[in-house]
Image 1: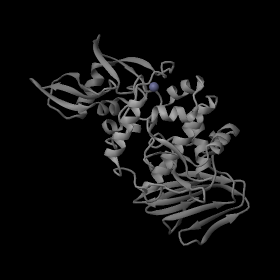
Image 2: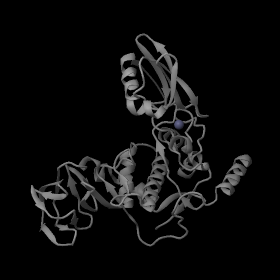
Image 3: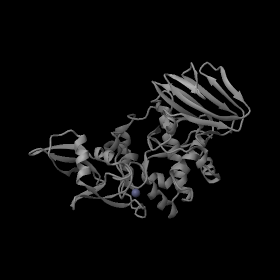
Image 4: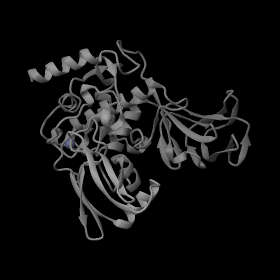
Length: 384
Ligand SMILES: [Zn+2]
């Protein structure tokens, strides 16, 4: 333990001030909101409805529609304008406002808070503005099974809140902070909340995970397969102690701990064709692995005696993350193709969800789970 603390201290000195724009030093008065882009509605016609009083306003605040009950309204974007029930409105943004705590259904999924639609460089977006604690309550239920141990769910709540608040603080996108999918973290509105998820969000209310009193991106994933990844190597993110990667003995019971599949030669040739290299395709081998035994790069052999190095993530993107579940794999020849055998599901950075479940089952508290997966990070309550 002493050695570990010393390593953490050294890293703190070396990295002082090199990451994270936002450095929360005091508590804030009001619970923040998060702007969530609903991916199901991007560039699509969507139906919205609510059983409560509502107002639909344009960007100048003029009321376009209002009433006691919002019957299903079709919303879409076309030619830089917004259409309500097929009628064009000369506005690039509309807001749908309801009473506090009212639910608005978008394509039958209930959402809390308010919504707005906007044309963003020709792209039609629908964004849900939701109080962060409601958001966290939904993410816990969307990302984990709510029957899992409470300490595991608390850890997920703290990192989901930190992730979202970090994205809000960075303000990378003009109209929203996070997507509602694995591009950020999964959020399925009020449909994924229940009393337990609300109680967990409330118990951890305002709690964020900080490193050197700064926000960082609290990555997480399903199953690491034995060792979590280094954020610098996977995402070219800051090389910091909480995201350096740890050996994980806790996820062996995950259904995704081990997997294998055979890929046909023709499918590998399809991938080869996307690289636009001269024929013939002669094979593929592992070039470089990291200390967590994840494949970093592969060598593609082609032509007479040529080869090229490619990132393992390129092959994973081509085959799909549900097939090549992680980059922790080996390859060997098989009849008519190549046998892939691997461990884990996901990028492997940060908290391993199935590992956190086992830690919770074994009686570890949420601070202990977070300390294990994000060494040297600390929990801080930013709002009450
Ligand atoms: Zn693990």
